[in-house]
Image (cartoon, rainbow, N blue to C red):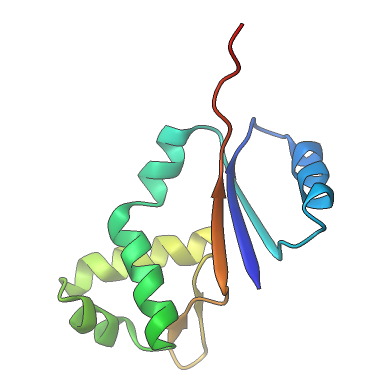
Length: 114
């Protein structure tokens, strides 16, 4: 499965659909932000590290993940809760968390010169 994170204007569902068609419909999940500032506020380096660690190690508890990355449990819990809200992490009935995607791509366009 693949997730695509992109920067696009609010309510630009048509742009997302066109981009999905252009890439052969290869994404299983789309997440859009209105600006690079918003994207990088939500998808921080430490959250990227958590995604990478979860993908490498497989499902685990938040406590085990915090120990693995040598971070405070409360901070990891907050980050994982936000990643769950964004749809990038899933939680099982047994309170295990995991990344359901093989790939996560980030797409954004630079402003066009006038």
